[in-house]
Length: 225
Ligand code: ACO
Ligand code: ZN
Image 1: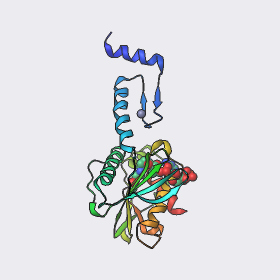
Image 2: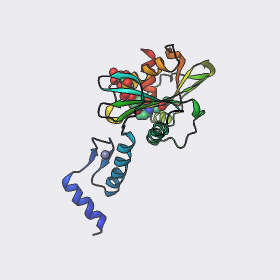
Image 3: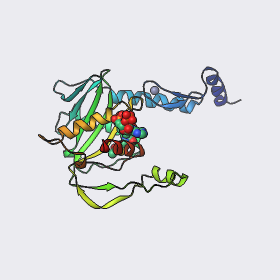
Image 4: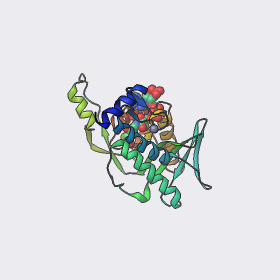
């Protein structure tokens, strides 16, 4: 018997099947050594990435019962912008984005949602834009495997008519174990209030770029209510 088989059997006696890590949220099979190794690697990188030590001059833009929101601007001290970059990298990794160049790095605003446990559990990257193309609602056809494929390729149909928008949300992300608690909703509310000094942006003035299936469900719901 080779070593690998032995490992699977040994691990399988302790816990078999899929496990979800309560700290990093990764789903893996403990029975698979490759999976476990991958988990250990992800676990450490992820927890280091979302760790928030705080800064003396941090810009708190909102406070909630379960955390606070902090804004990082491109001209902030290096330790702050470095954190923004690190978190963006984690998020892009999860979204499957590879090295997407931000249209104008000197204009982006990074918002963190920091939990009471001092972890960055939400991140929103916003940039100033001039126009956006509305995502058209899908024609009402029953779900087919084909449509599933489409959704995974993010092939939304877009209007060809540009509309004026002010704030583009290029990334929105909430830690997997903290979803459906209104964190994304609160982040967008705060962005609408703080993106442009002295005005509250309407939902028509914000635009979500290249939404994922999750992102589209959230944005549709958010903009309706
Ligand atoms: N399925 C269906 N409805 C949803 C979903 C979903 N997955 N997520 C949000 N909604 C709707 C619900 O109506 C929800 O209200 P409810 O929970 O009372 O029913 C409402 O939106 C508000 O949801 P929040 O709790 O504020 O959203 P959450 O904090 O869970 O974050 C997000 C949503 C950011 C999309 C999260 O699922 C996520 O991080 N996903 C992975 C990353 C991702 O795909 N991000 C979007 C990329 S697109 C872009 O960045 C422009
Ligand atoms: Zn883990």
